[in-house]
Length: 326
Length: 293
Image (cartoon, rainbow over all chains, first blue to last red):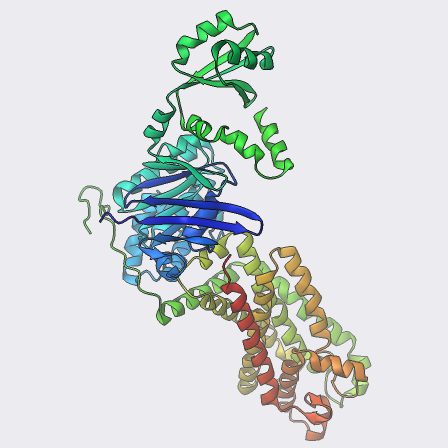
């Protein structure tokens, strides 16, 4: 029973010169919800592709549901369900036809198809819409249909690659309700990737990945506790002077993140009054936050997840990120 | 499984056991990929109509327009429309078959291809299903032109029709396999359309669909013999004209068959060449889809 359901050993994946995954190792136990957290381009999708047998590792090995992803590709595939970042539905077929197609590809016995289809469609609240063409579905409905389809053949591991990306906040939280609900009903392990910090908190355990390496792996609570300090962000009339003063007078390492002077300090709410009294620069705004996974990410990588994304990829991308921040 | 007495809903997960991969699973995959093509085709009425426009134009407009000019070269009582009818039949299949393969490129763009590629079935099953689907759909399209046979003075004869349908299926399968092979490489729909359009017209014009294969200048003779479509249009024309009750001398003149340096290629070999080509293209397509990253 206590055999890990996902086992990754010194996994490396190179695309030409680029080393997308640089030697990672971890295990996921049955029934866990395991999250891969990191900025775009950190190696999350590459890792998931290898685990789903869509890409071969350059070196190292991975086992899913007890089978090697290279040597027993088909067995692994039968035991996993997949929901990708981009939809993989046939828009011109109905929801039911999409599921039937899947059932035939995965060899779901014909007698089991109808009751199982009803079950998974009811689970995601799409039973009434099964006869409608997928093109008439909203973004959230499509994602739910994909989750239902991923579960149709009763996989042991469900892979969700950025399951809520591109959805509005309300739909995002409803997708999470469905995911948490299915955990109650199905005997299943969930492996997901996300770059939303708040979503990572839904996981039992999280691996933080940056530049192709795992920098931390633990429960969300333990990770937050390891940071300990509160995060304070201020804007002033002279940020550079403020940073220097924080260093000289308070012995605090501050840096500009997301356009604000940012630093970590214990019991921030008590520190702020001192700051107002002693800092020479004029303070325009202050915010104090309890440690979140964002801070965890920052404490392990030295940057916020959004900063990390801005350094990934080409300059164009950096421009887009900068633009978004305004 | 248990059923909740209040809501009537299933409360326990239905036990689903997915079998080991085997021939039976692969056949099921071939069948569903095939059926999806038919479903998609049925839903796409516009495509059915638009792909008929070109063959109908060739048969009725070009066929009628050129008939007075062409009648001098044809035996008395033989319409030019009858002469080009087999070629137009082939043409009706040509476009639909290539377009069926284009759906792979669409599927890639819309992500659905991935759903197929991660399934625990062999890639050959997927490619074969796709080619069979394309072949069936294209042959359906050909049936519409076949129904118009009377307008081209081609008799409604069961034997003839069965022969023509068989030949259309073979042609459609080979063309879809060609399209799938291109689709494995070409990732954008615009590029796919450009590549196939560039191929389709030369294939059609060099096939002898619109003119007899004998008495051509040497360069054109060589080019027509290199065009795979030639080897299907010629047997089709032979089938049509041998059902017209004409003297064998005239038959030999109108449908002389493909000649290699004066040697007449038998119908069986001619069809065999197309079949072999279809199998080879299918093989290449399968190999191309077998690769992982």
